[in-house]
Length: 225
Image 1 (cartoon, rainbow, N blue to C red):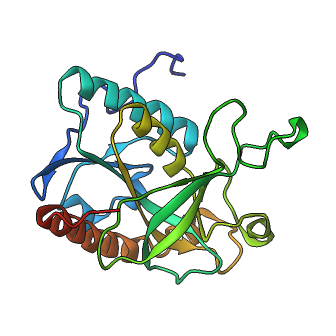
Image 2: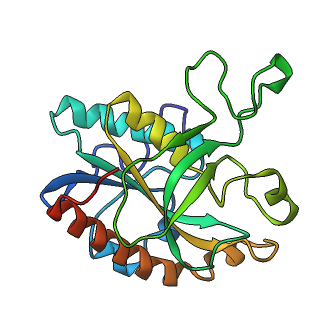
């Protein structure tokens, strides 16, 4: 049966709730089950949005609206999962210091690359919160899988498909965002989904350690700009 456009997503009616971490309510957001390994499963149940900026924006906005209606907006949203990079260390975890939206191109109308017309925002948005002890990198979000020469057109150090959309949804509800990404690919051309999933088990363990660091930072009041 083909679902109608109004068919609910699998998590509808069973919305993941924020978890208590370091004395704060935190909502974890992920895109795909393949990234949600056994180490992360021991720590939280995420909001699974689906892959790409459209799904991330729609699903996180709906979730935050529902939580706002319950009076349960989280203190923090964490976007986490895999990322690609041609320059960063493979399988290592980085926190995004900024995020850009690489799909936006209104240069034909005189706008700078990455700037959304008539929206008073720069092309690159800062993510000011920092978790002590986790390396930082700049991030670019878009709807395409980046591989090989496609990295040439991207200034950011790593690429994903959801975090910019998550940030825009969070901004609407005045909830801060932290983005944690493990580098799953980028050194070689991608040819099959297995090229992406090969090291996700390693990233799962390292992301779990980063979540533990986040909890420690929250508890100690160290998650600061």
